[in-house]
Amino acid sequence: MNSMLSQLNKCSLFNHLSAGDVEKLLKGIAFNIKSYKRHEVIFSPLRPVDTLGIILRGAVDAQKLLASGKVITVSRRFPYDLIADASIFAAIDCYPSTVSACENSHVWLINKTELLKLFARDNMLMLKFLESVSNRALALSNAIELFSLRSVGAKIAHFLTMEQGRQKISTITLLFSKKSLAEQLNVSRPTLSRELKKMQRGGIISCNKRTISILDQSKLLELRDQ
Image (tube, rainbow, N blue to C red; front, side, top):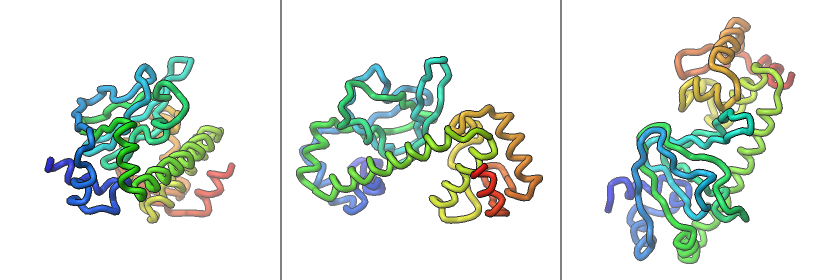
């Protein structure tokens, strides 16, 4: 069994199965593992929606191109995250955003028809897929709320409180660069840096490279709700 494929049960879709059970489940199912170089496009609005992906190695960005020509990074995804789970069964012809590798990556790919075969073989797999789609809808709702905030400080505070809840710790480790965070918050990198320094001076947070510690939770929430 391919060494990367043997780790597929680390994905939420297959984590109820052992590596051996995943191998048995995939017997007779058509799929492939494709490598992508940095900045190479995996899915795009020019491509028909017919394939689901699971990141095995590397990381990818989901981006939207605005009418103004500006590109917004909607989310960054990491090993064992699903790609296109929210769109593969949608009533659309093409992918709604561009998904590209932000570092050299390997992605497990399966066609919609073959995925339906898997659902028929394992009902739990289908339930986990629906859970993933529901979580993606919640993430989109949070993203909309984030973009609706007016001040940069409120956006940062919102992001930090969300990450604090996800990581369940007051010292948050960013899984991506501050440049990528600025793109997700739809602000410039210098503006992000200035606001983080301001929050540090105010005793709300402390920063050390990709680690951000929340020092004053009440002040952070006040800033978020401004």
